[in-house]
Structure formats: structure tokens, C-alpha cells
Length: 177
Image 1 (cartoon, rainbow, N blue to C red):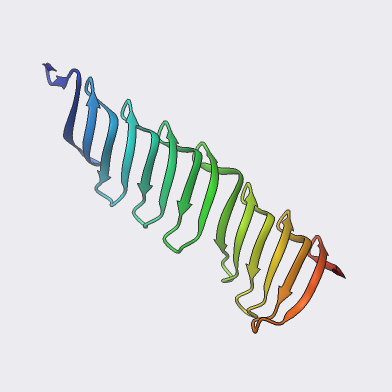
Image 2 (image 1 turned 90 degrees about the vertical axis):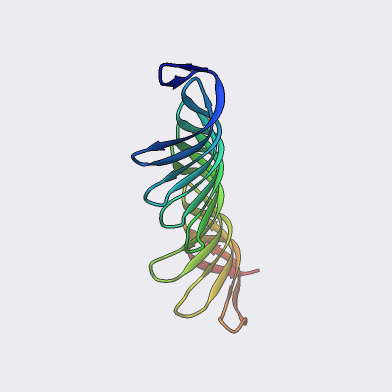
């Protein structure tokens, strides 16, 4: 039922705002439940809401085509999620306050054109991963620590020949395995 110009109770609505249009569930005049908000600049959120804010599981796509699917708290990325950039780079792991934190898996393309795909901790290469140098086509696959090749790994030429295989320490090759 309506009290003045506010819907009191549970329902589904389509509401226009200066910034965009919401279609979905409401509760006592607030956006609460499942719904979609489409901004006039091309952004879109499809998911769960609580008290006019994304809360729970949902998908947000920004105007550039970057997409986050996962948990939201008070409108920010929080908990487990996957952020996929329009260029194909991604991070799948833990978020807090809208930022990547903790351990996850990522694909990172650097300004040089080099590409890393593997495990990261707070945005730093840590764990198992593959780094490909664009200029030479060489590829290192193995263990990383603190953004450096560290532990067992293999460096291959662009044609697939093994150049070095063994143990690395802080980016330097130590010994064959």
C-alpha cells in the first residue's frame, strides 16, 4: 500500500533517477531485494540490494566493459569475486572495500605487452605462474615470490626449446634440476 508518495510494503517497481533507471524489488520505499540499475553513462548492476545499495551477490559492468561478479557490501566489492577487464585481464579472489586483497589468480598485461598469468597475493606475483615476454616470446613457468622468479621453474624460447630448467632465486637462475 502507499503512504503519501512512498510505497510501504513489499513490491516490484521501475523507478527513474537523474543517474539512471532501477527495475526490481522494493521494500517500504527502498531498493531492497533483487534488481537491476542501469546508469545513463552505460554502467549496470544486476543483483541483490539492501536499503538502496548493492548488497549480496551481483554483477557490475562499468562503461568501459570491465565486469565484476561476486559479493558486495554497502555497494563495494567485498569477499570472493572475479574482476574481468575488457582487455581480458582478470583477478579472481578476495576483495575488501572495493580493492583486491589476499590470494587469488590473475592475468596481468603490462605496459610493455608482457603477460603474467597465475597466482598473486595482494597484486604481487606469488605462487605458481607463467610470464611471457612480448619482445622475445620467451616464457617462464614456475614458482614466484615477491614478483620475482623464485623456486623451481622453466624458461622456454619462443619456439618451445627449453633454455633453462631448475631452481631460481630472486630472479636469478641458480642451478639445473
